[in-house]
Image (tube, rainbow, N blue to C red; front, side, top):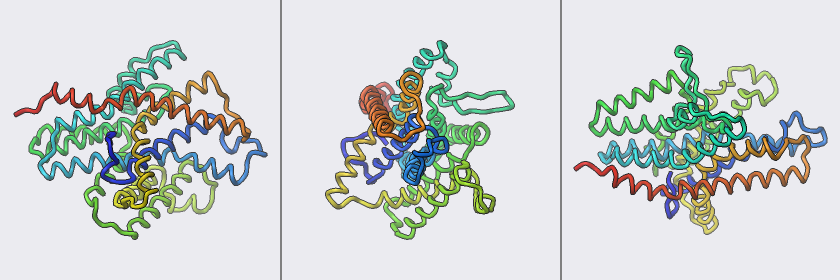
Length: 371
């Protein structure tokens, strides 16, 4: 998932990664500009507005897509290399640590200072729990609950990502002959998923890793249609689970799966779609350019995901108030908010992610391979 000089081996996945990050940012930006649809001025309500509000509340679905892509591109490759005997734990740790930590540290420092600016208090415990990807832990027996660092709600998803990496590292080491340490890492991550946070997003990540094993195989319009059906059914169920669709016989029937099972079904659908789409190589000039644009935009998608909520919180505190009227002014307000989030994300990328390769080379020299 790192930024390289040419489009990824699997076409369209970079574009999907950028779209997922953009959807999360856009859904949060819309809630900054306008109130909920039910609270809008009656003159601003209507079919077009309702459709727009429905399409711009897909943030949770976009996060599910993130987990599928991560499982496919990271977990799937670990399993492949471990089976081939080419897994290198040292290179894996350097690769994943730099990928996660370079922009994350920058964002956490910025968030820490902004929260101090707003609340006149330092939140060091939350800061370091987020550095260690321990936010989201809830252990009632110990009275332990570690939230994400305030004013940056999207950080809730990072522990799932990081501990999936730890689990993959353990699997790779165990299959490469280092049974004791590998098994310990796998068991510790499984314990974390089962007893500290809900395991459903981990299962979605594993679905992405699983379909990677059939990369460049099983290309089928039937599987593509099945992915669409599962995705749509999971999405519809999520709307009922979130209380966004009206009460009906269907809402109270056995066809509604609940939030987490709907998330798992959506992840299954997305996994099938990613597996099929990754085999659709662009052939026309337009499709090749679109795939290349997706690759370029995806370079700063992680920074966009991490930074946008902080930008929105500062705007909410100092600059803007939500409105209940759909007007030309409010539409332009949404546009400049989106542009500002993109610019800040690119600045974070320039400070951190752009230097990933250089940092990796430095760490490889500091921690050389054992002979």
